[in-house]
Image (cartoon, rainbow, N blue to C red; front, side):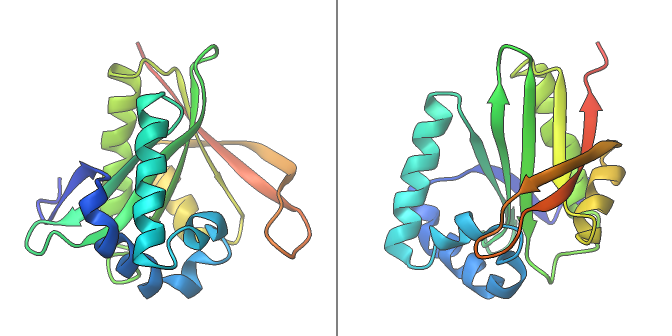
Length: 176
């Protein structure tokens, strides 16, 4: 595994780094992460977002992790395990990465590692990645992390001020 980064919980002290990361990638994140982006437009807003994410983690609703550069500790990616259905053992990944770190296998490696955590520590049975067919980088991450295309979800995503979109569902099953 790449030793240039590490995975860490999102902490309040990360607020300036999170804000900087989101603002540096604003144009890339608008189509796919509008709600997360909107909650990080200022450093104070990032602090509030982090506190909310920590509360979600405590209540086992959502888990947000950062990928940080080992040299600078700068955040260059987020991985979120969300929409967890504990009864059926299903969770969905959302993720984003700085454009300068893209296409290096980092996110695929991190998703694979986080999938292992979700299966072994959280005891989930199925992990999902939902992506628009035009988000080639996200689909590449899913496939490289072992996820398999399952089906097209009709009218799954409603971006702000745009018509609903069909999305592609990729899944990874726990092999116990």
